[in-house]
Amino acid sequence: MSKYKFVWFVVFVVNFALFLGACGIEDIPVIPPFPSSNVTRQFNDRAYVNIPNDYAGTAFTNFAIYYRIYVSDIPSSTTTESIFSTINPALNSDYNSFRGYIDSSTAVNIDMDRVFQGRNYKLLALEPNDNILSSPSIFGTNIEFNFSSSRAPTMTAGSNTYTLWRSNGGGLFSPQPDRLFRNREELYRTENIDPTINADVVDKSGISADVRHYTYVAMFIVAVGINAASYSNIYSTPALIHVFQLPD
Image (cartoon, rainbow, N blue to C red; front, side, top):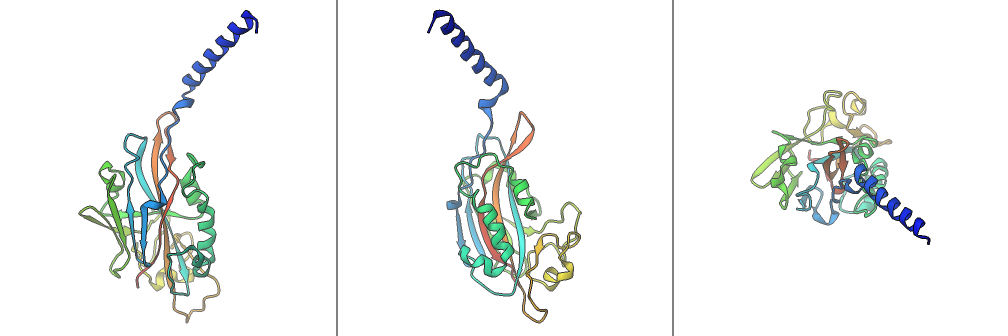
């Protein structure tokens, strides 16, 4: 290589490196994956989620929990994926569309909000408030989801217990009979399953009116952050919390 070409090459490399730095390409923030190994499921009604410490010092802003309710005609254990298609084919189809992201080492900064909402998943709400999901105090703790009570399924974090609330889409639909996760006729009634009432519910075809109905909810957790350069949300890969059977 001639002296002239060598000098030109060095100048090019330096300028290219400065260009990358100016564009901030090397500083794209990434939210660490939410490992599925941090979730323990028990029967159809409990799950324990260990919140990693990995999000401290990152672009983290909050955790988001996405859910969808599935109508079924069978009581079943939900601890294995093989039963999902029997419970409701839509549950199996939805889960398969998310499965490739779970524990993935290559799915980075995928817009998980668009992925979940594209399958009609909604954001879980907590009563009295969602503040715990954005508090660093939750890092390193274990949270419990409990669907064993017919009064109201809950999430417990530390000494605080929160009631799980269905979404109303910011007022776009009106969940019936209420926003609690309970198996009720108004919840699974076919005429109520539409975008203006129970938009978070998917029916199962072929169930006659005289057959007992069951309902299940699939819940996934993701960590959310903010890209300070673009002011857009970034997401971790998700973990399945559980497919809970809603109490009567």
